[in-house]
Length: 123
Image (cartoon, rainbow, N blue to C red):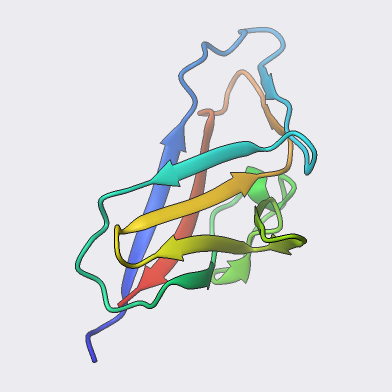
């Protein structure tokens, strides 16, 4: 079997940040922000649900704006499979597609870079 590869997904929010109030992006289980990343072909990771973890950064908005320890599940990310699978993404090996939803609202102060960051591991 091949080696594990950690993919770091860093997504910047393009909306301008209000210099006084910051930026707020509303999201919830009922109204998630859905991400689909495709073209990740050539892996040996079988189709199914794979864990999504948070990197160890001082403030991660997917961890409820609290510090995350390396490898901790991202509670603000999930995939819907009839029930909510928290901390998981839907992986399709054949076409190399990763799909997940952000289900927590994101609030950025004027001094913060509006971005979210998460990690997935594939072989």
